[in-house]
Length: 414
Image (tube, rainbow, N blue to C red):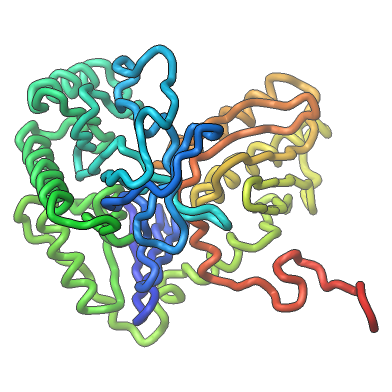
């Protein structure tokens, strides 16, 4: 059973996802800084850069959005030209264009946008211009994959693209078709607004964090949703009824005196799991350091000394660390390049066991990731798609003295 625990403040919403009582995802969103990913804008091209094969688009925010040439070409790879055309033949300065945000502004970079439009629903992802059907890789049964593929071909119209989501497995065709019909209506409304609006203009805002999690991971029949705000609970209940096609599914309103995160044991887990040093159950430890582009994780034996031999001891710690690191990557929403310095192992079979354990843990993650493999220095390299800024950053601000470096400077005049 999963539990969604939501804490609401006037300017901040925080959401924790528990699986069997263990914290696996955490998200925070400020009311004045609603996430951009998934939102549609009518923008104006302000600069075309042939040397970068990219353009900058004004969508009405402080920083112009970045549009790469690949995101201007047809979304179906089979329909793209063999040789990539120059960006200046596709876009011109002053041109108005509908774009969708695919990556939040991070650091000094503005948002990244695309013309490969997609609208996710409960059961399917609708891509108005993609012209293909795909089935989630997490649907493992060949017979079910074939059924969903055929169903997708039946319900899509000419030129449309559809991705059958993991949750569509064993789902009735009527529910899937109803989901697609709603997404078509959304797309029609976006097009209508685009025709009437002057650039730059917001055409469609993506869902709130609570609605996204309800849509993507919440099972109304088995999971539990607790919100400590009656108004937000009512809105969540209405959204649940909408995606469940009219079924009444009550949301629990938390009314306890204690903070909701303390009542469900979340605060303690947040303090532990977002620390630089995380202690494993065995006594080993994980050290977590993060920069804008790179995350480095170091595994140490700590107090753990049990095991039949040094190799056995090291392997046990690494396996436990691999499982925990997979959870923490998902929880912290780490992205980009991730390097893990496991404790050195002599036997190749043990190294493979560690990789297998890490991949098994990361298979539960909805964000795309890839374990690249071991480097020549014995480090494990992996990548994970970076879409949104770290929610953990909403929990803290850079130190006034060290400016976020973790050091107090002793340089200068004293």
